[in-house]
Amino acid sequence: MKIIANNYTSQEIIRIIREWTELSQREFGKTIHRSESGIQAYELGNRNYSMQTLIEIANTHGLTITIAKKIEIGLKKTKLPENTEIIDSISIAGKLVGNGNGMQYFGAILVKTNLSEFELNEYYKQYRNKEWEYNIKEQKSEKIDVIEIGNYSFKNFRKDEQERCYIIYSWGSSKNALLDIDIRGH
Image (cartoon, rainbow, N blue to C red; front, side, top):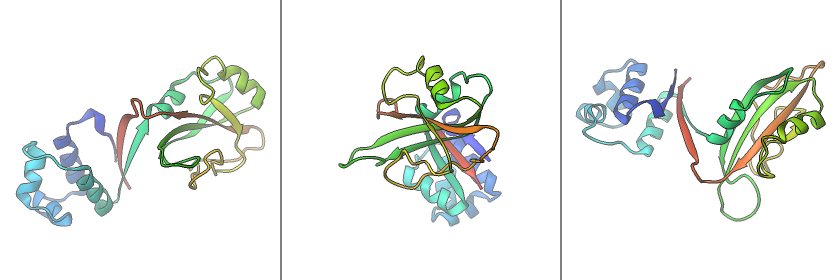
């Protein structure tokens, strides 16, 4: 199951998740230490739940909550050069580079193409407004090594001998950080 939470109210989200688990309000409430009337109040919109409650629900019921940035979505919506295909994408928010306690936002697409890195750079420079946007680097494994802190990888990386894979990535700020909240069931 995948829902884009921006398309629903908070009460619809909790109901969709509960119905996906195929549990009654009482049974669902027990799994997260809430009463049947508490779950009913969430679903009717008479009571708001916290992000912590949503995380508890996700952990209990095998859901993943992803907060996608405009960065990844912007990269995915950008017209691709000919003979180029997106095979994966990723959004990450957190302490990713440097010292200090700042938060960075990162989005990337993994593309397969027969173009060279130079040709890709020439193509994407038309979209590059700042030096941290539309950066290109050949991708030789699933590991994303342009991020200094943490261990992030593309899930759909596959090395094709005929074509090369490249990461096209941008960094962002906290301005207008969130675009979609994606809740997935495993």
